[in-house]
Length: 522
Image (cartoon, rainbow, N blue to C red; front, side, top):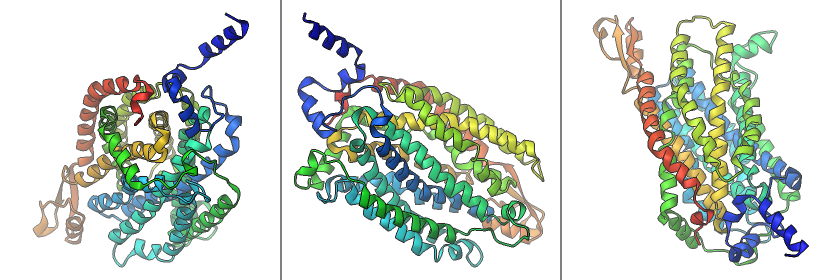
């Protein structure tokens, strides 16, 4: 063997196993064409895509703003004593992220060649989000206050539309990431997603709840108390509407999109992309993966959907609860970067499975903490310190699972229909969280036993519904809880989680060991 041949062989032997599994030699040319022509898969190298990573990070920060706002509204509604049935109704505002597969093929297939395959959707969608927030800012406070109680139905419709636009932006950005980043750095897409959404969520959830609270502003930010916070929902949405419009204009003007193999052809028929989406479902390996993911979050539904609301119900101020996320944010920003070292390889879901029983353990700890919180009239400093420690600890398995799942989706995605494939997988991830949480909110009152104590003729009557509780209080009685459905639901979810880990966990291990060609459509 020649000296040059020996060097070539040594270089191949040092190449990651993942590269050898990705493609057969005859498919290499097509794969390179669909990615970046001069990219070679290998160890991630941040400096190659530094500016692209920053742009992706900013796009995901913008995406986190509507997500954070939608998370803050239930805390405001809970402080206004709305029923858990209305909370379940409002939770449906987040469902567009779980339905975006319905229009993802259109985003993947229809575009203006001269404008750019992904910019065709990113730019107008972000302009619409900005305009929507500017218009809604004129009416949001009235809807939130209402005559007697918040207008939950109208709020649900409005935030559903806002989430629809955000979900459409997410489809295009997920697809853009596959070509904006070089092949060796595509694993950073999940890091940008996690870090960016966390920052946006922090701004729209923690900061907004603090500045919206009269109690917090009077105590820490004002010399003379007033009845309102420094910022209302209208003010906050108006500000971010302006930010969306301004930054989208800069993105349009200065960021060029790399051409892909398909952007030089005529527009691909959406019907073809829908057919390819159906082809995905026909592949047994993809169906098995989706079943595993769709059932994976049931174990955490009771804790994730209800713990925060139960703490507010117990008397913890919503703005203080929001501020507990402050020490969690640095962990959620740094942890994806650390976890990326273990999820950018060939077995990202191993980290997911290792975090699963750890996260289940909090299904015992958090309900105990909620029960303990009911003992206080005024919450001392050590209560918030302990709460912060628990929240930080809980964020570790949650973030690990999120990054691992996103990395696995990026790894198995077929670049031929990149946006649809990524969106299909990420949509299933969102559905896996949304449907158990909505169901947990809707059923919690079914598992709750509350009776009116006193109240004359209403003595002994059930008062689970918010209207019945108001009638009991108006009659001079008090509504006593004998069995809290929160604890019943958490227990049931943990039982399901143990069964999932025993059965579906083994299936997930087998799926990630498959050759990457098994996940491709062709």
